[in-house]
Every structure is written in C-alpha cells, then in structure tokens.
Length: 394
Image 1 (cartoon, helix red, strand yellow):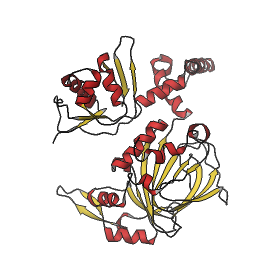
Image 2 (spheres, one colour):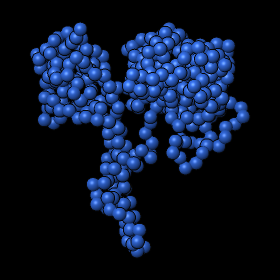
Image 3 (cartoon, helix red, strand yellow):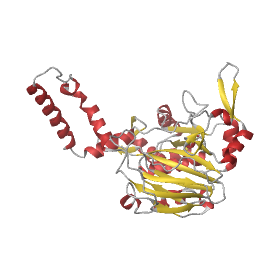
Image 4 (cartoon, helix red, strand yellow):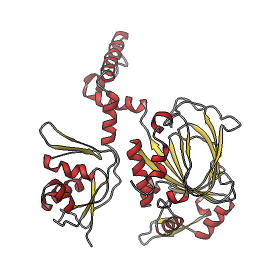
C-alpha cells in the first residue's frame, strides 16, 4: 500500500461500491500529509516551464468562458518553422489574479504521483481514469453551475474550495443523449469546503458549482471515470453479431412489409440469444478490462532483448489484467489488448508482477525457480507487448 492510497482509495469506504457508487455523493475528510506525495506546486511550475502543453489541454476559464490564448501565452517559432504557444509567466499570473481558473488535462501523464493515484483508482474501480488539474485564486467561478457526463473523484491538494451540490435532474445523463437535464434547483442540497486531503465522489449528472471563496488559493485534482453503460453493451453486441449474415446484410429498404418483419424478427432473436447467454455482462467487462489503455512507458536502452542482469527491475503497467492457468497448464495473461501464453513455469513470474511494484530479475528468478536468462526472455515478450517496463541500466 502506497503512502497516498489510504487517503483516496481506502477512504472512500468499504461500503462505497454498494452504497454510493453511481448513486450519491460521498465526502471524506483527510489531512495535507496524506496527499503530499501526489503533487506539489513546484512540480506544476516545472511542467509549465519545460513542457509544450498546447490548448485546449492547458487553458484558462472564467465564468464558464475560455480565456483567449493570446491573453497568457506568446507564440514562438521553432527551428523547423512550427509555431507553438509558450506560457508567459507575468501574463499568466495576471489572469489568475483576476479570477481565472487554470486547467490542465490528463496530468496523470505528466506527474508520477498523479499517475500512481490514477492507477490505484483504476485498480479499485475497474475503470479508465483521466485526471485533470484545477487551480484558482479567487471566488470567481471558472465554470458556473454545471454537470459532468462522467463520475468524478476529487482530491483537494492545497488550499480550500467551496462546493455547492444541487443534485441530479435527469437520471444517468450521457454526452450523446436523447434529452437534456432540467435546470437545477435554486438552493443546493449540500454545501461544504474541501481542504487538503479531503476526497469527494460525485456521480455523473449532479449539478454543482465550485469556487475558491475562502480567501485562499486552491489546487485540486478531478479524477474522471469511464464507466460502462447499457449503450456500450449494445454497441459491443452489434459488433460481435457481425459474424451473422443477417447482421451484415442491407436492410430491406424496398422490401415488403413481410420481409421487413422477418428481418426485424431475425435480428431480435440474435440479440435475445446473446442477452440470455451466460453472464453476457461479465463477458463484456472481461473484454473491456482486457482492452484497457496501457500507460505507455519505454524500456530504453533495450530495443532487441534484455540482458541476463539480475539487478534490472521490471514492473507491470496494466491495472485490469487477468492471469489464469489453462487446462493444458499454460499461463495465460490478458492485458492491454493482448493475450499472451507462456509455459506454466512462468506463472510465478506473472503472479508476482501482478502487484504492479518493481521487481528485480534476480528475485523473479528465485521465486519461479528459473534462470535469469529464462526470466529475461519472458519479460522481453511482455515488453514488446507494452505490458511491462524494465529499468536499471546506467
């Protein structure tokens, strides 16, 4: 268990999935020390100074309106005449002091502590996570009263942020929906201030407004979940049913009423057969987990194989992998859109790596009763599949 896991994953509560997930908000109080290893202002400054983060990934917002790019960046022409926008510190400070909110998307790809947080949430909630950063300095609201089309876990890193929750006005609204939620009520159903270490879960569709109204700056992370819906299941069924000719065939636009009815009946029978099949939802989740997006990490300088160096360190990159022994006694690992089969002797290696912690090749060899050369061969197959990364060379 890492230093910040108790502050986020465990603090959601043992009854979180049964009582709150997808149903209602949950607020858990913490302390600054519990989130200190996730992100610091120094790290934010370093990324802004050294990375070319182009809009809309980096943006400023105030009163629900995106501030023009030229208000806080300057264009620069690179050697090959490509133009990029560099943040101008003085102009950025001026806009933030006036009440703008700084937003950086996908910061789980920029900061190691945030990536670890996202991976822990992905493991616990079995969902892809994208983490966005929000920083503000005044009581001016960046986005007004609004709702999100995805569940979020909010982690307050520094300062204070006032949240007003108005509840949902449409059950399970979606990005591409057939209707819009009704306007929220005038008075919030809950109002509170998040301080460092506090964690808030908010289901999709809940109207809310946020402001740094306590006379303090605020830095928080919003971890957005990608949950599966019935619409996703139906799309998947339409894909796997394409093995049937009737699904691939043209619909009878110019056919008779009888031909159209027969086509509709045949399609209905195929759909019902799949829906009535053994644990169709479980099958879909297994496929979804197996196709999870891997947080890519190269294993340079190794490009054609791994040396038999017991001090090299290997780490599994996936969070929703599946490992099992087949009837033939082989080890089958499904992860990152790949299914890899190894001899049963490799199973202890894969089982050890499943904790996603770094492990020395020498230790893996001892665990599995194999040579370091054999372990290096197994790991190289995983590196090629972008499921494992290896470090240690100087």
